[in-house]
Amino acid sequence: MNEIVQVVSSVGFPIVFCLLMWKYISEQNKHLEEVIVDFKVTMMENNRLLNYLINQLQPEKKEGV
Image (tube, rainbow, N blue to C red):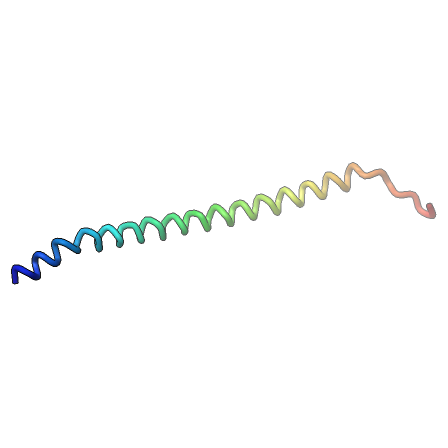
């Protein structure tokens, strides 16, 4: 029984620490995915606006030229 307690106490901390690190990393990945999605949406909106501005600033094309 004493040997079991000694094994659990010697490997218990590393196991708990690994589980906590796994949880922290998985939460960070979820946050990173949300940031990436927001970035993609922002880039698409910026591209749309840029295309609109380019179209507004281009001189009118003359027909037959």
